[in-house]
Length: 525
Image (tube, rainbow, N blue to C red; front, top):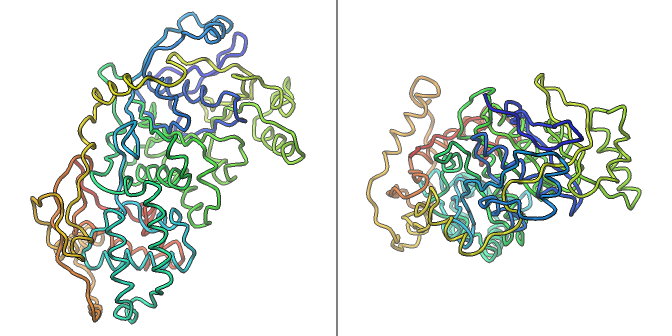
């Protein structure tokens, strides 16, 4: 049975997080400089020691210190003595480093198809009309068996549709040249922000995030996000994509003795800034339901009001560092934050929130009955690992000894929409043919309804059809690439969703959060 995770102490009392309730999610909040990063590091160590893998974004560039033994700081030694931690031994933890730009960690990639039109529209900051055209681009590419893997694939399909818009108007509706132009400009801007490195293959296999080392400790996956923070929408969308993919791919497991994975979403306000209602609804559903997949989600932000109430209500474990109250609005936020805790008769929660020192926090975890404990003022236990960044030599050693060393380092560019539309030659040889489209479609309907696909009149062929020759996939490192048959299966799933739902959520289901109403078929390694 997993041991409770010691997070904070107040006098002789230990405040511990129960692993069995860690998948009820949590919140770490506090103003800049109050100790949120140290709390995050302490929590990550506790989960790793219990054999629970962790994913965390390193927005300051110093969380890689988790890999090295710590305790050298005089302040850390002083805090250890003050809290009476007799068994606090300096320890390094297993770490895997990731980086969208491939400089400070293993490259982290996904494909345009995996991202889906919903998240991509937000990433490109498209309006409603432009988002509708983007959905058409995905739909038409799906129906013609065109793989959209990277930015040049999406640009190629958008260009072809823009040049032949009249051929698709009758079947799909108007495709505005202005909207195509806006999408192309947004794609160009995204490319300048590093989007061309984020989209491609080999795509991240999420199973590589759920690893343990030889001692049974959970691997802590650290995404280098100090450069990525220069593009906050790319950062927020990338993390939301990963969270939704975890929900979509992991099986239902119910309540476990400990989580399968704990996901820390740092700078959470970036996710919720200007978020569309349809997407917010799906985020709320993912947070609520991903618990049954064995995943705990912890939002880290400056103020609890950064998280919408519908999501905040799902976060049972709370660590609240000091808040500043320099304005009437700030004072109102302090009172609101204080009211979210279970009251302590001996504690004026609102007053204490503005008095907490660095490393102090108001703490309330769920007890064995799943009820919030009475809020306590306590000192966070200092990490056992190093506080601060590591050296370049230490980073290179971690990369060389990583469990995924060599798996994602070499990019793969196989035949996809760009090659088929422009006649270019893919840079990687093709090794196997895709399954026939008709067989894949029949297999989908058989698994869903127990019979063949319902008869339907074939759609009229466009005057200027897109190529329909199925591209030949090649197996690469990371997640096995999706074949044309799998894309047809996704399209059929989206069609069924459209018939059932009857609202704008139908189109939402087409995207990366489609697993909520009908998951995608995938191939695993």
